[in-house]
Image (cartoon, rainbow, N blue to C red; front, side, top):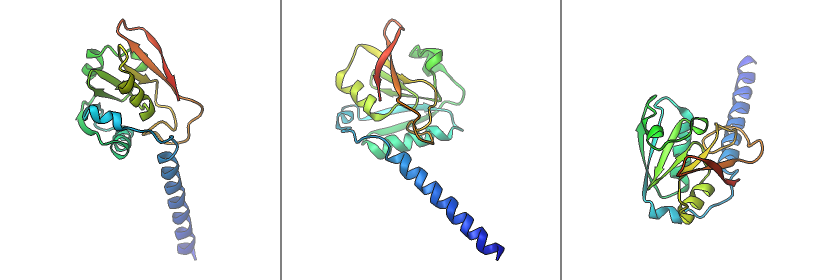
Length: 161
């Protein structure tokens, strides 16, 4: 009898996990990522022990044709220092798209806009590690504000998703 309840419990846990993964994969509107083909490949610097970084890489690879070159940077912040990413916007991973950086769990919609419009900025960032962002678990608790880091180091709003 106890084995039966254990199996029911494990089945329920599996259903919840599958539903959560399915919801996380499908919470973003479809985006035409063909403009990213002009970039071809990116380099993503991450912490070697970070699980959400791996999930973000999966998100990029699943939804684009980009080649993602992964560099385990450990605790080395030299890439963030090289691009002068403001401390308050630093996250667990930094991706380099041509001359731009993309810091954190930025949705593809913002990256496509960056590559299409080619603004005169250093890069874009999503502050923190918000629930429901690509690579993060949970459902979004509101909109995501993506920030642009200007060439003079100032921070402005790039877009809200």
